[in-house]
Length: 64
Image 1: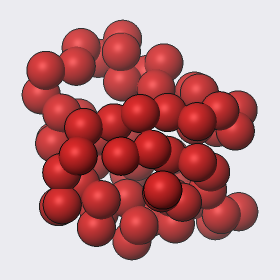
Image 2: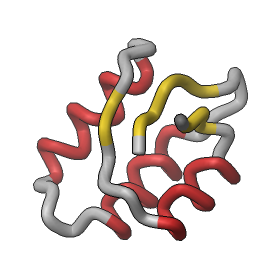
Image 3: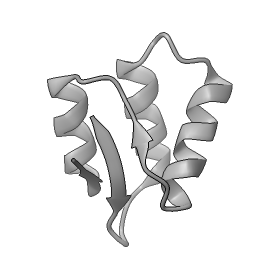
């Protein structure tokens, strides 16, 4: 799944928590870099996970 952006009221603390919860194979440092890339507006590839997708969409993260 690709993260392609976010809406203005996105809570990045919660985004970090959700990614950490669903992507246990990523280190804390990896997750920090992923969230930084999302904030910068870069496209980020995350594992295809239905629940992760729903959680991120609920947090106003735009996915493709």
